[in-house]
Image 1 (tube, rainbow, N blue to C red):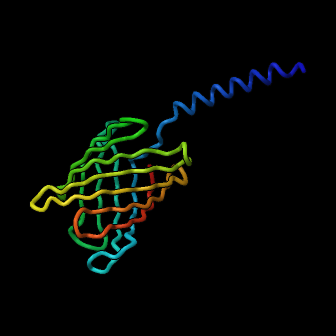
Image 2 (image 1 turned 90 degrees about the vertical axis):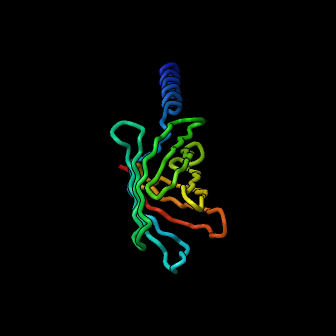
Length: 174
């Protein structure tokens, strides 16, 4: 009976500390990462393209530099420069970018830790600058199975006659 007050005090303090930590927890989105992607459906050449990618913030700014190198075909490499607007609404980060392959885009990304810890979702829209003005939507579901490693599945849905592209990516966050 005389231990009830200390137990209640410790329990109350623990609950308050946990609630404060949970409310102040960052979204957990990592932008400094490298990855390898494998396209699950064949391209027009009958191959399963594989690519490597890397992205990192410049210093402590929100300026993001990204690059992708296609390992199976020449000419599909690109470098992009973007700006990440963190926590725009409801924990969503918005990235606006322009790439060397005459594309510009916007990407919305959010951690879904309230559903499953480590789960992320992203939706992006890209549009090519040029004579054909091609555009596409990208939908991605990612799972961080450790702080450093994540796996993602994405679907790129181009406008027009082209079929969608499905990719599986393995990433290392640094």
